[in-house]
Image (cartoon, rainbow, N blue to C red):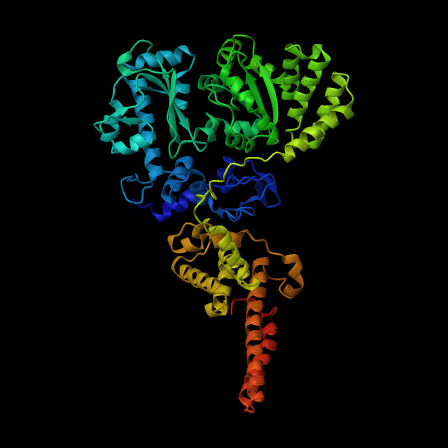
Length: 635
């Protein structure tokens, strides 16, 4: 079902691009725009720009760009229609019900819908069935209030082999999509069965708040009829679920993490839910696995610091600690909180409360200090040999920190604490960093550029478009930019003054013609609206790159003298039109002169050509007068 244009515009108007992108990227204001680390490629220096007045984004590193719909499509890997629906849900705007069986529906959208239907079914089974009361009491005994259960979408999978399969079919979900979403399995006879049975269900959400997977906790110890298996089972990897790229709870806690400027990292689902319910909401869960590079990049978008709540008895927390050096490598500050023996974040916050837990956070120590204390507990500082091993281990950790100033402060503190010479520590640090530089590093392949070894690398559409834009003349670039981001007066002035055949580059000419036709039909050529217009699909990358370019007004101000009474965009448009026409006339003059030389060299009559030359020279002379301060209105 096609979404009406007026609804698309309503969603776009209600979705401020800075607010939307801030849920994915930590942005900092810089002048009139915002900058941050690009979510589409790996970088250390921010090259990703968001411009509020244009409602556009652009990365000067990888050249991705577009409007708010483009951003959601790219990050969530969904179609335009689904991006509109995602933003509509965010803004509380009701749209027509979609038909996911239509040909335009993407595979990802079908999996998202399968998960959404499953989440609602599990919640209904928990709260509205007699069998679900057992699971509901389990959650309540964990201290979860009913509003918390609803907020996190907790549920229950019935003790049935095909309760979800049957329900999904009734709601129009194809069995194959249920299987691809990791919610069902297939028997040898091709019949389907529920993957989750007799379990307490924890939905796992994407950063934008869409259900992508589930974790099911065992509730019945002795019911072999439903093949209980492990304590927890999770959705396997799917097209929309990659465990290494998600952190549990982030869709609910990201705003508070950004506000507090640090994230508390815990191990499990119940740890996070209990802390969130207690009012400690800048928290995420690693789900008992070692942190991955993708998860760390995700955390770094929201806060510069991470506090790991360490449970000495937990293998999961130990796994999280193994990812600490990776956190340090990525420039994040890391602190450690070690809970009393026998406690985990869930039990501690329920028994001691929010304030006592926050007191522990205030007493957290740097990872370097934590590591030193652990080495001391092991007795390594009791002998010279052990002390050398311990200090070397600490320096190896320090070598991971990219901030040289921060390393220097740590070295000073370590030297004072263990009565060592700073010069000795610096020599050891230098030796380690030299070895690291010599060691070949494995770099994870980028999704955008990964190709098979025996295939030609793909053409990068953004680079191709950038080369095209670079081949436009400055006047052509300015004219196209001004058409797509100016008021009606400027657009009408340009369209009244410039003929399409005056745009020399074929792509610039074609885009100009398309813009003119669009303006005649709709009355606007606003870039943020054109990006997702089907008729401009082949120009979307060119449009974003044009809009992302900055005008160098200061360098051209001399050429704009006499236009001071106009708006800046009108001044620029007058200058761009004049420059374009001058260039065309000069090229025609040079062509006529060349013809005159050839005719005279062959002994022919060049009088007619000389007259044409004179007319062109006069036209060039009158051009500046034509675009003078007398040009107050479009001519």
